[in-house]
Length: 128
Image (cartoon, rainbow, N blue to C red; front, side):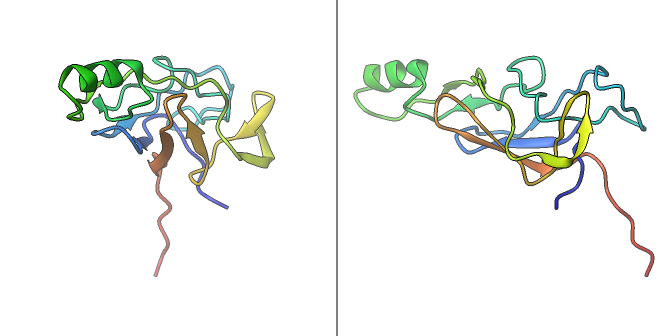
């Protein structure tokens, strides 16, 4: 089981060139120091912010720019295209009527990228 993901978690897309931060609106009614996320916090440009430049040829803007450059891969600005929720989530903990988002969950972009959690936004301190 992974760590629970909260507002400010760092995300990375397999086709993005820069990390991004997760935005969690306080609609799940679970607040700690920061709002906790569930698997439905996957809306592009609301929860999932751009990852700098996109390098996926499945992205029409990248494909057009690459064709114009005679086949040389030409990254274009990232515009996340997430249509489904995060998977798998944590079925043992429900937040706002959906499973909680944990750090080992993945989110698929319609352009072929896999978005994953690099840092869940909170840390556990273990006394030694």
